[in-house]
Image 1 (cartoon, helix red, strand yellow):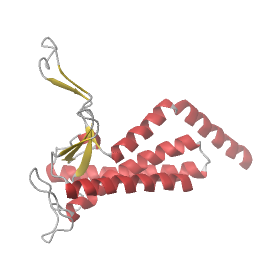
Image 2: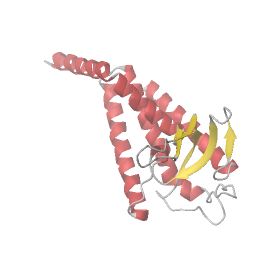
Image 3: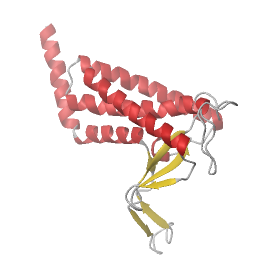
Image 4: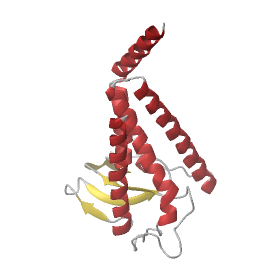
Length: 213
C-alpha cells in the first residue's frame, strides 16, 4: 500500500499548492506564457466537472448532487484500490486506480472547501485566503480551479462545414489542472493495458481460490 499512498499524496500536494498559488496570486482570465502562445497558465474556475465541463441544471441543488455523487464515487474507487492491493493486483493497475482516485479527490477538495476559505476571484481582483467576511460560498459549493491551457492549433472551420462554418477552431480548447491530468492518465492506462490488467487480476484470484481449496 506504500506506493499508492505516495502517488496519491504527491498528486494532492502538488495539485493543491498550485491551485492555492493561482487563486491567491492571479485574477480570473490572467495568463502566464509557458511556451509562447502554445502553452499558457490561464486562470479560470468552473462549477462542474473535469476540463471545465459544466453541470448547471438544478442550480445549487445540482451542485450539491454532483458533489455527493463525486464523494460516493471516490469512496467506491478507494475501496476498490484497497481491495486490489490486498489481492496483489498488477502494479500498473494499482497505479492507474491511484491516479484516478487522487485526481477525483483533488477536485472534490476545491468543491468542499474553497468556497469557505477564499473570497471570490474576479477579473479585477485576486482572491484572499480566509477573508474577514467569510468565503464566497458554502460547503460543497466551491468552484474548481483550472489553469493549464494548450491552444496548439488555432484556425477556423471552413464555411461549408455544417453548423460550425466560419467559427473559430482551437485544439486543445479545454483548460485543466493537475487533478484532471491524473484522472486522464489513469483512464488511458486502463484502456491501453486493460487486457494485461484483467488477465493478471483473474490469475491472482484463481491462485487464491486454489490456495483455499
